[in-house]
Image 1 (cartoon, one colour):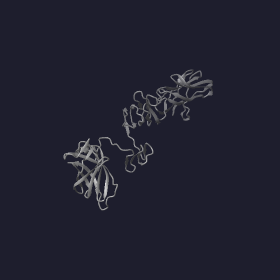
Image 2 (tube, one colour):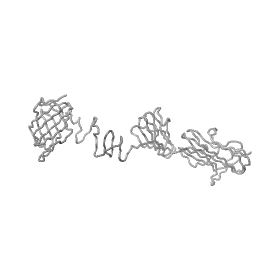
Image 3 (spheres, one colour):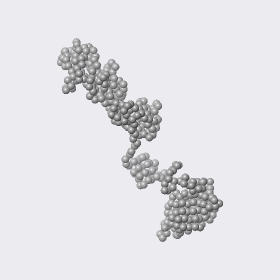
Image 4 (tube, helix red, strand yellow):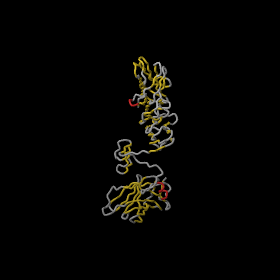
Amino acid sequence: MKTRFLTPLLIVVLTLFISCDTKPWNSYEPSPSVSILSFASGGITITGTNLKGVTDVSIENDSQNVPFQITQQSESQILAYPLSLASFVFGGLYRLTLVKGLATQFPITIEVADGSITAAKLAQSYVPVNGGTMTGTLNLPSNGLTVGTNQLVVSSGKVGIGTASPASTLDVQGSLSMKVNTITTSTTLNDTHHIVFANNSSDIAVTLPAAVSGRSYYIKKTSNNTSTVTLTPNGVETIDGASSLVLYVNYDGVRIVSDGTHWQVVSDERIAHGAKMHQTITQSISHNTFTNIDFDTIDFNVGGLASTDANTFTIKRSGRYLVSAFWLTASQANNGDRIDARIAIDNDIKLAEFIICGGGNCSASVDGVLDLVAGEVLQFEVFVFHGSSMTTYVLEPFRVAPRMSVQEIR
């Protein structure tokens, strides 16, 4: 579409984009400055400063050069009319040339705004130099963004913050802040989450969104209780090949990153599970029968494995564990008596040892490394062949009471 100076009612609005001086102005004449250029009633109105003394005005591009005759002039405004037929294409770029004294200022690049040819429409199409809100896309040339000296720089496909010469795709020379959310109930994560602290008082689930390549989350349990935080992927997606990941202990944390199909753990800060129990009350061990040792005291219980009610250790997280146990008789054993000690899971013996006593107090211990599965329950059992029952030795100051420990190896 084109705009021509054919009738006095035709109005075309142009907006100024770039101004530069390629020649010095007369040192006795202040440089003119153009802020608004508008077309109305077949002529142009130039608004700015130091316009008095301008003798020639022309608008040109690669295909035409239109001179204008000045009819009215002041320090802040010039009114001029074309000396030949002028045709301007909407969206086209043109150069405004002003001659003042012996010097020329050029080019000032101008662009015809749009087809509405009203000043009101111009305000809706362009953001003024004194500020405003854009509603469309801002397209910049390559390496065309610099804020301050090095506050924000785009250079060769790299973004620099605090540096004028970014060396990486994103180069931040300073501190970095990420959004932090604290949750207390089950939550589905989205693109507004990054660091998530779970301060839960009951078991909750953190549901992940559909995998997006490169998306990362950091989730940490910050409640000092036995309530769990279960991370659950979307649909059939997995976390390190598993259908879920559980945070059991206060300060358990993981950073996960999506490969576009599933989620991978790239930083594992889950605390190793471990527990130990011992016995303080004498227990009678029947002759020729395996007896489950009755533990009554928990020394430590990270991950909630130990239970004095059931005298067992329940594995919460599949993995490799160091398991050890010890038992000592309180009564005198006969020469040739036999004592068996074993670690069993549902009567399935995992570790075992037996000893033939030589008389006196007789002990048995068992230890080893086991690959255990979440949900398996371990118990310590002792068998004596003495002809009658024997009692346990529980003299605590000498640390010889029956005991058992289970420690996750991470």
